[in-house]
Length: 338
Image 1 (cartoon, helix red, strand yellow):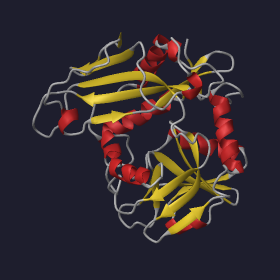
Image 2 (image 1 turned 90 degrees about the horizontal axis):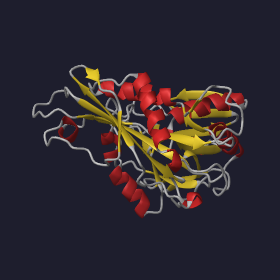
Image 3 (image 1 turned 90 degrees about the vertical axis):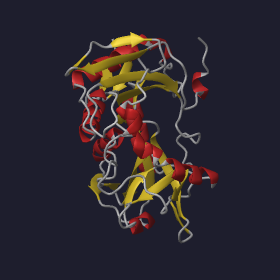
Image 4 (image 1 turned 180 degrees about the vertical axis):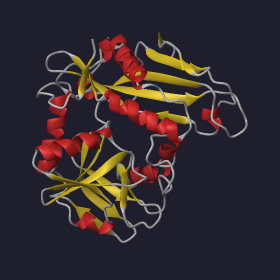
């Protein structure tokens, strides 16, 4: 196998195996590895008609010592349980989830990018309601599936600042809807905004709260944060997905001597931040160079707009150093794949 590891896109490449467990008659089956890339579903499956589908995003890394490690898989397992509970789906046990993740990474070990390439192995756990029914009711059967694919940077800009556009005309999620859980419908609802942004030269769209359009919510498919006067500030909202990356960055921010505030963030605060960024599994941190609001032709610029701020840079490199085994994992975040 010959891959240009240093120039991988963030896309799907076929690997050797995925792993599956089925929930039937009140219990989960023994996970099975398969090379089949397709899923056979009844045409009346609840995931197809009523959106009973949740997923996760995760990464495995080949460390400086050659060891393969997964970043905080138990947190992903707990978040999938939270998503599944909200959609009245069967909850995959944490132990089952973590075991399946380890097994599918190990089975595809040759696709884990070499250390030093900047690439990683992306892991996609997927939970589907599979019962055939027409009435709007929770499924009785479920499929938990995990596949992997080697990936490069999420944004072509890499760790260079991105330009962001505010979209006031579309909402990612309702105020008391599904914004706080990881369901496919949230991402489908963001596609129109995303395309509008891309057409205008903005790789990412920032959403304001759906009710009043006064507060900051999500930044595309990532959490938003701003840094001002030694404080790391990130939105708290029912419409914001609890990011495991953001949770980790808040811990590291305190380690670096920053104060941390997770609260309602007003729109007007965008003008006061010294640094800003979007964070999530795919990109880790994407520094934000500028935010444009077409409703009032207003632009917020961070630094000179072309270079990541010092705190973003420290946080990014500290988290990456833990993930790649370059610095001690004092928090016990990395789980070794044996």
